[in-house]
Length: 325
Ligand code: 13P
Ligand code: SF4
Image (cartoon, rainbow, N blue to C red; front, side, top):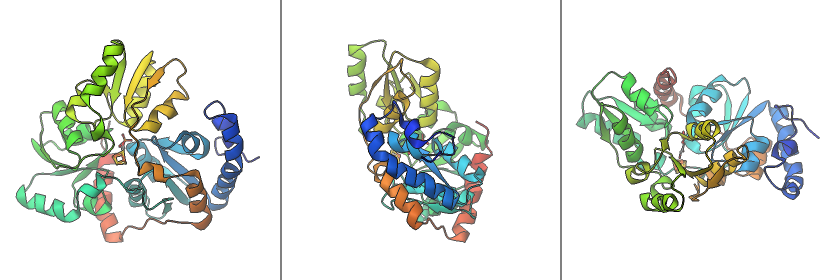
């Protein structure tokens, strides 16, 4: 039995989180992944939306987009496997150019990243000369390269305020942009992008939960529409939502975000009952245990960013990483 980088075997890491029969079925595959990680000097970085088997079983480092970018910049490993979506893998490559970055499935995209191109940003700059461009990391390297600074949902307000201006262009998530506008005096010029997962939640469904239990706690990701955020007791990035549950230990909580988050947090929060309105991200779910194994075994799919684009995108990402949160 192989021992992972945490000193605990993958099977032990899953004990109590997934049924024993599933652990037994998954064990050979997880052992293979651990062995390949050693051979390749690789780490698996997992976003909070990965399924519990991947998140708890085979990932070495996990977190929200901001934490994954920081971990990718700091890792000593030669190979980074991104158990997340393509923009996260690209960000890892941008901040750590000499590493080999792999994404197990090239279909792991993002509706926000698809909502804007570098050419769109150039047109916006012509329309609003001199107004800085703040770009959510859920974008392609091309778009980052045209931006002044990046942000994530974990630092968007601080990034906007770090610029010391009274107006910014905020791309591409209209809902995150609208939420930031409620938290700052800086004027926010929006783009019309949205997340296909978070835009499906409604304030009405949340009021329904509250009608059943007025003490219920509702926590939401800022990619949700304003009527949803208006019902929330707390709004934050995926990592902030997890920290909030750890700290507050609510009796009953609705996590208004992608399905797997509740499954991952529930595993470590026995005193909390999770209500799980389940909107699944079809892109995140392209990443499977088999895909991670194949990725490490065959060194595929390598994420490549053209050096000139990577250099310009790096400025925007590193400027973000320097902002204190
Ligand atoms: P976080 O940075 O909050 O993890 O969000 C990433 C994402 O894609 C949310 O849909
Ligand atoms: Fe993109 Fe939304 Fe999926 Fe996050 S949940 S990766 S923002 S489509």
